[in-house]
Amino acid sequence: MVLLDGKTLSRQILSDLKNQIALLPVKPSLDIILVGNDPSSLKYVSLKQKRAKEVGIGGQIHHLPETASPKDIFTLVNQLNQDPKVTALMVQLPLPPHLDTARILNLIDPKKDADGLTATNLGLLFQNSPQAVASATALGVVKLLNHYQVPLLGKKAVIINRSSHIGLPLSALLLAHDCTVVICHSQTQNLDKICQTADILITAVGKPNFITPEFIRPQTIVVDVAGDVDFKNVAPLTSFITPTLGGVGPMTVASLLSNTYQLITAG
Amino acid sequence: MVLLDGKTLSRQILSDLKNQIALLPVKPSLDIILVGNDPSSLKYVSLKQKRAKEVGIGGQIHHLPETASPKDIFTLVNQLNQDPKVTALMVQLPLPPHLDTARILNLIDPKKDADGLTATNLGLLFQNSPQAVASATALGVVKLLNHYQVPLLGKKAVIINRSSHIGLPLSALLLAHDCTVVICHSQTQNLDKICQTADILITAVGKPNFITPEFIRPQTIVVDVAGDVDFKNVAPLTSFITPTLGGVGPMTVASLLSNTYQLITAG
Image 1 (cartoon, rainbow over the protein chains, first blue to last red):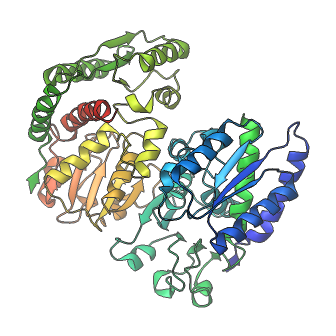
Image 2: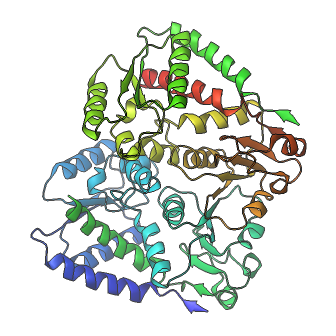
């Protein structure tokens, strides 16, 4: 069993990125919109800004109160879309429940969409377009698999997640790598049996110890996006597996910043 | 075994549509861009225009020569996008090989995209947005399944096609109906075994007699989008199946015109 070490790989990516950004005539910037005071969101946002600074990406955090209205956010997004000094922006998720997440994300100019979460970028990704900005999480997973030279062509990838920021963009990227893709979710019947047919199992459910050894056939490759895997008992069965910490998380941040770089160089 | 009779259903849909359009203050129009002289394309385009007229949809065919340059097409699409008299438009596929199909389709204003083939509409469809315009073919398939009350929740749908006009929008629609979705293609290994696990098999390969009884377990529901099924030998095994003619084809035309209606009423 080999650990898919996202922490080490993300450091390499960030180090390369720093060198590439140093050569740019204009410094990229990533503005982050944060609504409310969810403790995890506060932590992620400050981590993203810290890593951004380390590689030479500027930008501000726009911290709105929990009670921000849709109009407040629309106004801010439009202002950042139009500001030439802002080369990329993102909205930290989750948003408070009174806000329509998809609608807000779709306000972002696709050419500034560092997290790759607009409908246009999702559609471009499924079209396998070179202009597509991939969801940072999905891109992080695929970069990790590619780095460890996990064979993808013709392999069966089972994804437990159908969200437009994780499961769907992952499907698009893995199809582009010639995987057969199975998209599972809360309504899937016989999930354990389907997982047993996977060459690659990617899980983003958000339930600790949801994936037990019964889901795994020997030598499966397991990527745990949301802390779902009973690591101690599952890991010995796998050929490759992400660690509980230092797997997909740091890859997401690295991909967000790679996207920020891509956006300024494509423009 | 029950035949999924798209011919009869499409007539019902078109008849309802005619009544709805008669009530509109403004007549919708669907302009069609046709490049070259592919005999099938000529036939489809004239059929689409005929059905459009029957239900009260106007619009012109813009027939460009095989040698039309990208710029010729860009200019025409932009002109139609801006013309308020044109409420919807589509580009007949396939385009000649010197043209970049995705790039041309993505020039269409998503709010006039009757065939639902722009990246933005594909992404909105995956986001399950009420604004999404679904690919006409994919929508036709799902309307046909819904009409025959084929159960979809939790069922495993195996789709043999990963194109952004058939397999991918079908995946989006079937996920929205709570199917587990398996996307297969030319690089899929053990395709026959995967098909044997399907509750619903949707095939769009373009190879006659590609789907033989070995692919089918008893009571599977089979939808043949591209003439792939050995009908005589497969049909007796199925619970529902599309006929070789009069299955998905007429549903595609009906959905194109439903989309045209949706676009004018949403605007």
